[in-house]
Length: 517
Image (cartoon, rainbow, N blue to C red; front, side, top):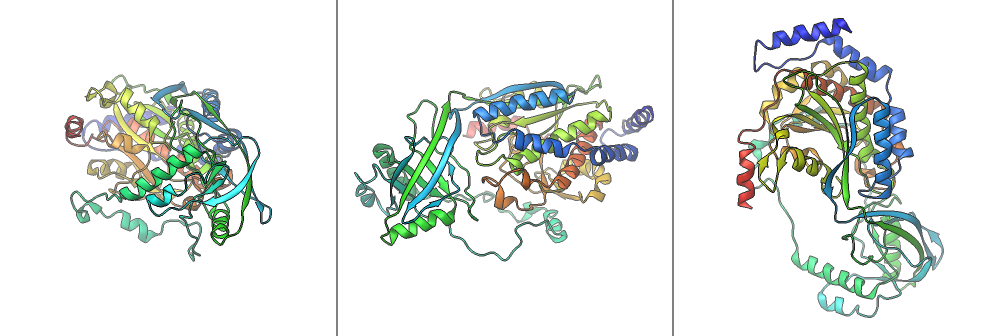
């Protein structure tokens, strides 16, 4: 270990001679990181712990609270510092847990279904039975004609999904051609002001709102929607705020079962179902994050933070394996690798497992608002200047092939230097493109260096947000590689005397943007 420390000291003394040069830690240390990550991996035990043992982790649910406590005990057992559950944001929905879920068609013949209650929807009054009615109005006058027809019925919403046979593999990896395309800077081909487009149909929204009002007033036995395929229901939620009257029970059936009943009813068949749905609401209106770290040791740099993270919450149908226990597993294992090697980083390396990502990035937004930038006061907080880097994982269980650098040209030389020992692992793509829909966006909006990895898609698009998202969806070999990559990049960022700059104009530009709103 002395030899490694001496090599590090020598390397960074040389680095100080060039204030803006980027350095890569020595090959001897790269060997140690890989050896720890591959030969002494804890990926499998962490994978079982965060899926089978914890179960689902819907935001603010009783199971999420239980999982937070379990995770804190695990992180303490692993020897990390400053382990805690940290409040992030008020959550208007409150807690919700499913306690009973039985759904079947009983006429014209019996068939039990794989069903998934919508989160924050209500319960049935025990076992209920009723006739199905398809509610598919085309205009407001047809909505009015539904009055008095929904009470005591089971409402089938119209089919919005059709199945088409696909002749492509269910799982895939990126090809060399696809990765090469990602390396091309897309900014030159993007028209100013046309980066995003939104489709908004006010008449469709008005129609749906009228239907929803009828359902609230007449309180049918249940509402049944379609979502998911291959007889696997998807997961989603309903609009609800804590303290409101309990909504009608709503469930999701896979398109095969839902569409079958819709077709039969539309043909004039009498279709009946029986359901027993029990959901429990709790008054937990808090989103929390789970935090652990390896403290920095350099007198000048120890307060600066290299942040690694993934969202800890999941939907309720499966055990949130690929989305996103996989990211939590990798980030926890990466921190373990660094700690086991006995390295004392210059900067603090902090693990953050975010809450409430699925409902709107609540955990990371709360962290940013409390530590980095106060949105209400339009003021940068002390943590803003100490933010060195954020690495995020949230695209399934696939192997890292590179990283999206969010149009930050200044980050390129850093990753070019740091990634050299990782190229043998297939990590060799630096893309200046932007990617969204996960927690790195929170920090990137503040101009901070925050990045999401490019991952092989595997079968992620088929399985996430469904009841199929369980331990079986994890590629343990890929996760071992990913953990080594995170450990190496985080360690380099924590030891490099230089750091990736904040985007030009930030944070001052944030106040200007908010004033325009």
